[in-house]
Image (cartoon, rainbow, N blue to C red; front, side, top):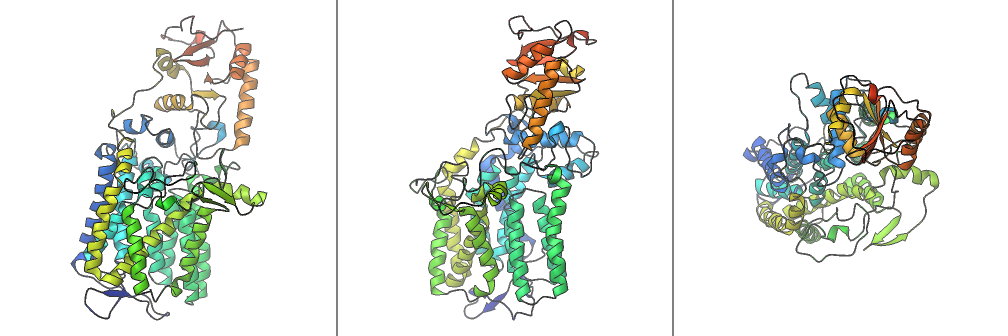
Length: 593
């Protein structure tokens, strides 16, 4: 998509000390055809580094597309189960419009492949391929692809300052050993696509014809919108920086105006296709708020739970804490880069002011209006209620630190190459990559246990023969009450998906609370009246729903019992033809009125 790295070099001294310069403003960056290591072999070597890091961290057992056991064992919580459920229902259902709709998982609540965080880009591709090949999980492939693409994009970025393979590969290793990326790939799979941020930086630092650059940005923003909602504004922010920089270079106004519509429009198109707009409210989530999961100013230096060589620092208690440690190798690279920069300051930083402004803005979003230092928070001001409500959609604001952190690491590598020469800088960076790897061993040990080897297919938690029999006689499974991770949601949803039964037992990134309340109220009223929905099996999660079922059921016709410790109402059970499952023991039956 982006072609060969346009390496802009000016040599003023020894052959191994290239210097990055900008051509006159009206000119485009010339593309230099480098020698052996600028051919795909260098990118392939970088990709192998990224793949090796992922294999070391997570193992090869996550790759087979028919193996889902490692996702459903519950070792790291419910998120991988959510992704699998979203894609399983999506691939089992016919295509809708927009194509991301996923009505069988959520029913009246409304859901889409976007809100199950199942990476719509991958879900669309593998659902389309389903007539040819059936893929039950693609996340193992995705995790490895993220590692490889991270290293390849780092190779390309460092190639903007030197064609020498050593600093490029060592820099790729440092980027591939990013704790923030590896941590996300350990559970939040879509958020591990940090290569999209590196691709955005690459576009900001290179030049192309207006039409090509517009197509590249539109494509990158479209991809980001089909991966994850947090990556989209980061990539779009980088585009805005580049658009502003090119406006300063007096690109044709017609191209600028067209791009101002097409690039953001590509993001909106992706959101529409993925089903983002199925939701009318609830974008702020059911918990948390902007400013509550902000970047602590000590976070990049706090090794817990990743590093083993630096002392732990105090920090906040929120869920994002511990995800922004840079690693000792990177911290030393930043220090060395700063010293090298003081010796030879970049002559082109002023020309990059739109990018610096945009990165600073993202850093400010990450820190938020509530400054946290070592876990101590100082609120600078309160946001207006309307602004706070909108900002809550990006409540985990610490993540906006990522573009700034990667840009800073790249700047340090550039400074080292300019200050030491490519050969010596490569040796230093290689040593720092080894330091990074050694320092992160506690983090690797932690992630080793995230995806332990497991049977290819996980065993269902609901093992009573009743469930298998019920799957033959009912068309859908109702969880009463339902909501975000309502009681019994996981075992019920996995059972329902395995038997291709629609359900409202959900865990989604966002829910419309009004729809949830309306559905629960309607279900409660139905149960009280005994006006049960035809074809629905009811799983009762609280005393109010159980009491309503007791009130409305007909003991001669309906079954109210407990199976695997879960209260269930099976309307019309006594009249089910061909029923073979035994009735529940009297001691397990829920009392009837």
